[in-house]
Length: 206
Image 1 (cartoon, rainbow, N blue to C red):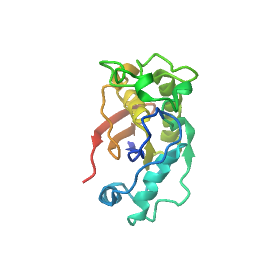
Image 2 (image 1 turned 90 degrees about the vertical axis):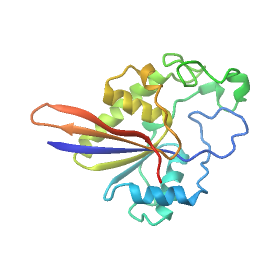
Image 3 (image 1 turned 30 degrees about the vertical axis):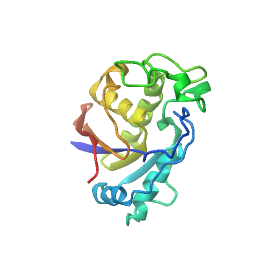
């Protein structure tokens, strides 16, 4: 039996976004709270493979952990844009109060119902369709290793949906806080046997 460990890390809180929608757009992370990254430096596995989404706030988050003594984290961390947050297309840069006057849909706890696309953007279902192949690829490429992936709330919910065989809309009920860890293992048995195991979601570093 071979276990591949996924350590999903949601990026640090973003800097003041001015009340504008950012979704899958670029915005810097606020990594000023050193105790958080000190705690993460002690929790995250070593040795490990480190991967970030294609958005800089994920790289900034892992670099903040590196600054607290984790020199095994590369200066230039490989990125994979398939792990990016959901694109909100034409809504990026618009005031949140105009786009989501009621704070988003209820009870899905997300910006949009899973099947709905933002104008010029994508749906959460679309996000799952691009994230899932990336995860499956990593289970093969890094079989038996620990993988630390700095990503986004939507990306991590997609990973949970894959592991639990949930429909995407059900995965939106999971809370994923900034700098939290979600632990998911891929277990490969003999022959074609395989399974997913979730050790914890939204684990806060202390």
